[in-house]
Image (cartoon, rainbow, N blue to C red):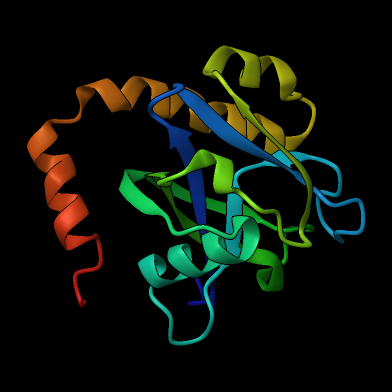
Length: 166
C-alpha cells in the first residue's frame, strides 16, 4: 500500500459538569460540508501545529472561550466528502470543559448552539446524518467513560496536557 499524506483534525466535545450537559453546535447553512447538521467543535490542524494546540485554537475560534481538555475520548478516521486521498482526515477527539458555559459566543461556522443532557442530545441527533450519528456515539462514549476515570489521571492531564513533545 502506498504511504499517503493525511490531514489531521481535532474534535472537542464540551461538557458542563455542573449541569451535566453537552454543547451541540449547528453548522451554518453556508458551510460547504454538513451544512445545518449538529456537531461538536471540530477543525483541522494547521501546518506545524500539534493536536492540543489546534484544540485550543479551534475552540477559541468556534465558541470564543478557553477550553480545559479532560481526556481523549478516541481517535477518528473519515473522509470529508468522497473517499479520495485529498478528503481523508485522521483526528483526536477530546472531552473538555469550559469555565463559564454562559460565555459561549458563536463564530461564523455555526448558527445556533444548545446545552443538552445526553438523552436529549441523542434524541435531537439524526441517525441518517453521518456527522450527527458520530456525535451521538461520541456522547455515549463520554457518558460511559467519565465515571471510570480516576481523579489522579484527570489531574495529571490537567497539569501536563496530552502532547508528549510539549
